[in-house]
Image 1: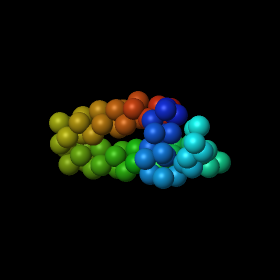
Image 2: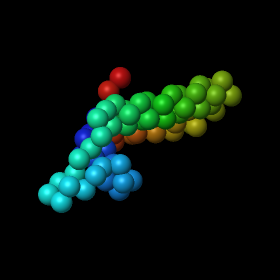
Image 3: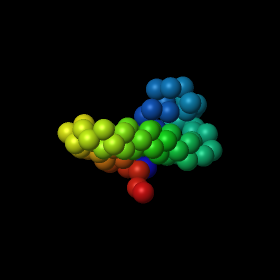
Image 4: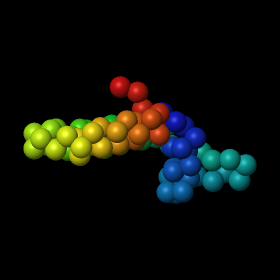
Length: 78
């Protein structure tokens, strides 16, 4: 996971506690973030399969690229 991005989102959401000189993050927040990204990827994969089933090759390729971009952005590995 890209901790910098996840930390920034945790701070913006109020999940991280401002300690004055830095932030305190809850235990396992990175695991939670990774599960969210993987679930989103699962949803995109189902959309990809639907596009393939409907023989919409262009849409399938766009969804596949989107899956890779999301995983790359958040630093999620298979």
